[in-house]
Image (cartoon, rainbow, N blue to C red):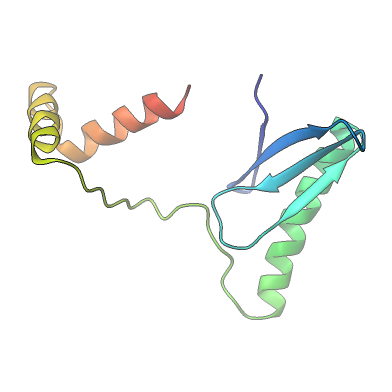
Length: 111
């Protein structure tokens, strides 16, 4: 079961709170804390969209840049033998290490 929502590049994790009988969501991957909730899926999605739109409007009104979930750049530290094995695998696949790592991470993050 997929428990994530996406809107305007922001993703949120959703859980059901059995005590309060509501769905509760929290936007992932940013420093600012943004949460939302709804008693129905429709209400939850509406509140999620409102939370993102309100966050973006507030950032604009206060003249600050909104947090973005990811920049597209990543720095990894790994043992030299893994780096060498990955570089060899990329070369064997006819890709740069960056292309190969992007593909490997995309596959791994789909599960």
